[in-house]
Image 1 (cartoon, helix red, strand yellow):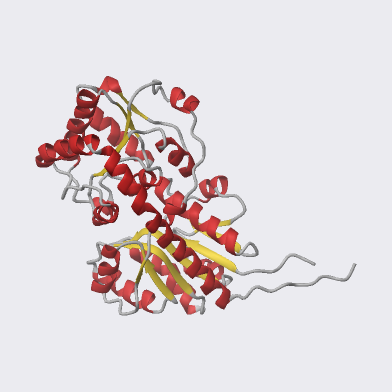
Image 2 (cartoon, rainbow, N blue to C red):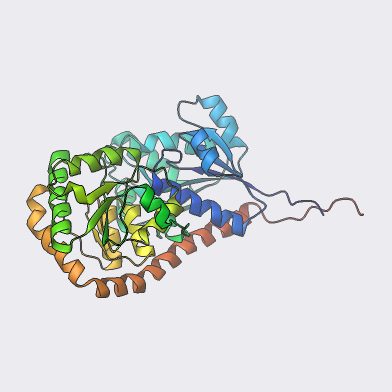
Length: 383
């Protein structure tokens, strides 16, 4: 019996951008496809093909940014299905870039499945029009949170929208040993608090860099003095390193802090989080990793997706990341630390339901893939 000839699945997201969260999403989606349809071939549309080839073996990789219509059309035309997502990719000025490829696929009758998308803000007329036209023609629309569903509905999408959960909730950890911590200069025997900061960027343009750097510096100093903690800044993108050092520049207790500089895989970062006693963070996927490890966490919402995740976990979350919030934020840090057994219990009670919703997205996609390309067995010549 020869190997079955299976479907070709295209994966289009913010992959290859060296963001740990997006790479965690890709890792999880690929794992789900390999378990459910080992006969499938996958094509990853990457912002940096070399990075994707190194970190994700066994996939075809194509660069798509800056590619003209004809070669892009040829690439998507050989797919059996195009998966849009996951992750937050549908927002002003960025949505049109991804949806250009979606349009090319739909012009060639390639089905499109949206996989736990993040959407918003969507106010630009062109982006809203493209979202409305392309997603209405998609076979299935799934988003990772209620805010994303609302953003799509306000953009004019009339089709049914299913709210699921982030695919990274299915990530399995890779060991992050004490030797790696020592190599990063983190001393042993310390109470460890992980912090995550981010750059303003197009997804968070309203952030005042100076303001939130000073705010998080207050938090860092408080963690050191109140808890006698050692603070580890965990970059989820390379530019987070610069912003972590900017926070350190405002701290008086910077000698009790360390910014990680290693280039780690998502599963390794998940393994690292296991060593932490508390997490305070802006990056959504750093908070997801904390939840998966049952670590008490305090989200710093700069966007609705972080606030939504905090609500689902029952975690405390203030209404913004601004200097004026320093007093309430420090009080909340103190409260979370004092009540950490209760926080851990609540996280461990609620996270399985989120994981189940993420698994349901994978199962729904696999069922759609079965309709598009049923499993077949190709028999070779008799022995």
